[in-house]
Length: 133
Image (cartoon, rainbow, N blue to C red; front, top):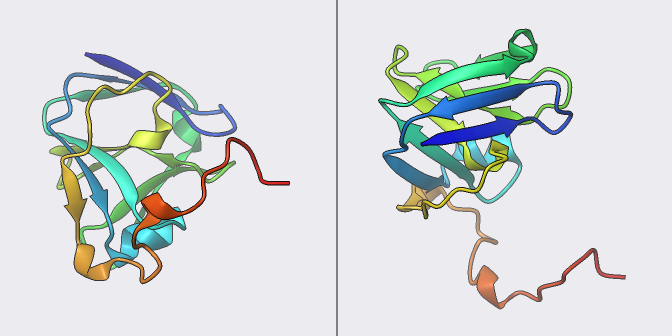
């Protein structure tokens, strides 16, 4: 399997070759902070290979002190990007950074004890095709 991805400003492009073993929606406090949202949507693989096609020198990784949490990001637009964790044995890819279709569904929600208090019954909230006017 091959997936292509990029950041918002398109200065960084990458390719992931291989399969994702898991796909989790993480509600931990770190993921909520680094996405600014209810949860992160991350794909995980111990076998897939990451190749930077363009802009590798524009990618930085932030490691939260005294934790296993890391976030890869573009230095221009701040978009979340793939990173290697656990001494390079685990590839973590933000699902939203992919440009190709992903056919894998999330395996579950994790760290739900840290879930935002407003993250309940969101399927019942009004839906719009565009910004409401």
